[in-house]
Amino acid sequence: MAQSEPPRKPQNNAAAGHWLTAGFGQTRRQVAEGLRIMRHKGPSQIQFWLLALLIGIGAGLAALGFRLGITVLLRTFYGIDDESLTNDAARLPWWWLVLVPTVGGLVVGLILDRFTAAGRAATVADVIEDAALEGGRVNMREGFASAAASLLTLGMGGSSGREGPVVHFAGVISTWFATRISASPMAGRELLGCAVAGAVAASFNAPIAGALFAHEVILRHFAAHAFAPIAIAAVAGAVINRQAFGGATEFALPGEPGLSFYVELPAFMLLGIVCALVAAALVWAVLRADATGNALFQRTGWPRWLRPTLAGALLGLLAIPFPHIIGVGYQTTFAALRGAFGLQEVLIFAVVKVLAVSLTLGGRMGGGIFSPALVLGALTGLAFGMIATSMAPTMSGSTTIYAMAGMGAVAAAVLGAPISTALIVFEMTGDFQTGIAVMTAVSLSSALASRILHRSFFLTQLELRGVHVAEGPQVWLPQKMRINSLMRAPDAENAPAPDLVRNLALSGRALVDGARLGLALSEFERTGAAFLPVIRPPAPRDPAAIGPPSPPEVIGTLYHVDALRALNQALAATAAEEHG
Image (cartoon, rainbow, N blue to C red; front, side, top):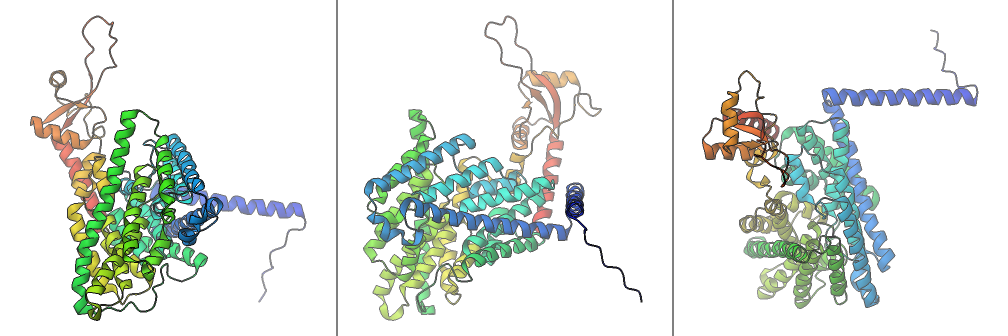
């Protein structure tokens, strides 16, 4: 049988160049055609899984880059890395410890003032809001600015976490993909979940917890159709971490912790209650610092870029006696899990850490609260363990297990994520034998903290902004929907008589152009009307003008039944997404 002739190689450089150009051109056309099909018809399941893989890799690389970037900055400005900060930073001149965070705060303030609307770094709370109200799309401009601000904060003396900024920047990556394929709101949320899963998995080397965190905290549901792509992204992010740092766990426990299960479990129940109170104190301190800063700058009229500068200066002064507050603070967590502190030292460090985190976040610098919650939890657990084991030494295990359980319990209460936080602790330590102790403390801590806080730190932040995501879609969906797409045009066949609509508008019973559905439903409830005019207010009147003011322009009519129908359809679509 005749064999096919092998393809001929290009005979010269010109032919080779033409061959390569033609190949690249064909590939580019195929990619463009694929994007066109996804934009118009939506991605297929295989294509969506491929997007999830790419987003997970991107989020993992972002987490890796952020972590390495902090290390580079710490070495540049302090000559040390995060793990050796406690011991070595004390050798630096006091004025340098003050100067570096002050300059860092100034740069952070200028970045946030120039590139963000609110003058603050975006956080996980913004990701939750964007998932619910913006179809999973975050503000990309503010995302880049927030990432830069958080990187400078943690590398130049701030005291906050690196995971929150990475989660938000991963949202920037998913938003880029969602925009390119014109993803629907449901697809956009799933892509955002993939990005968050990849970022958390890469940050903690915890793929299982990363996937569950995206469901539990960001999407706030466990839809079966979203699990596969989110799991793919989480695995991809964890692989990025393990390629860079190996398969070792983040926190290595010294020896066997030891647990007298049945006898010692009541102590872990009590630890959960204590951790809930500590978590509430941390959240209260951060929110109180933020409110105090707002009041101060509103009263004085100072420029908002000065706020991180002042916070940096105060942090520098605090770092003179307590250099361990600089950076993420995992070196303190390592020491707490080893039991390297005395009781008095632990209590002082815990109070100072709360103060430092409050100054950083309340001062509108950058960073998140995940790492500080882990640090504070480990210190709380260690202090509790020292007291508990000293009271019943023959019936107790080591203090290490208390530190680990406290680490999970405080973080779970702050984040409002008991399932994923408990798994993060397991995966970060590699010790699943102590799972029952951790789950006991986490469950009680989360249950009590949800009564004290508005379910979590993030949801409390949103509540203070007037965004009621925690109440469910029946509350936040009307906040999202605008009435313009629901109203009937003045010349529509089923519109009411123009004179009747005009008289209602002149009497003040009307809705303003662009109003949200929630406001419209409240107005229907108040007035009992079957329909209301939608008006466009007249332009501001010249004080010197003579004659009666111009009447508002009626641009349509909204019927109560149309508003209720639209809300019912939106709720049905949300239920289908959550339970599909």
